Image (cartoon, rainbow, N blue to C red; front, side, top):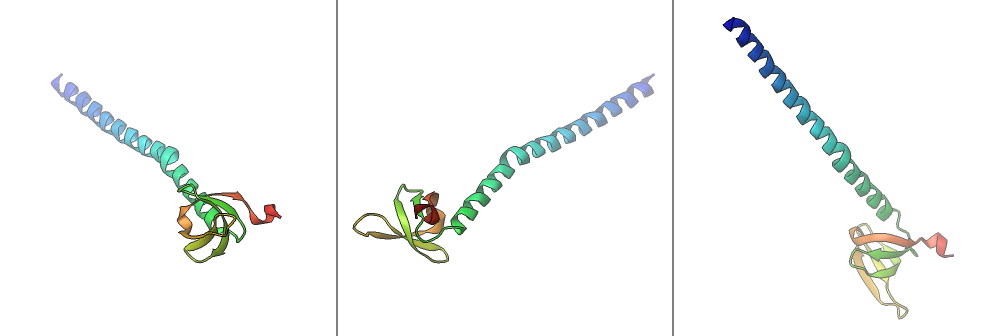
Length: 106
């Protein structure tokens, strides 16, 4: 009788361990699909947008500066920010949005 009780206790402990592992794997899968993957997708879209910048695009920076792209280098660009031709050099990573594309402004 005692032998049967020990076997059933061992089996329930094994099932509890398997259930814990399954729950951890499920939580990791949920974390990946709801947090990590969308963030990577958003970062890729932002990188693609910054790589597609063209001279003449009107942009807004993460600091709220609005201007027209005058020149583009590898990691920086120059903005013309006002009617009196004020120019500011910024990093590409600081571009938040492209408000008007150069080909749409024509």
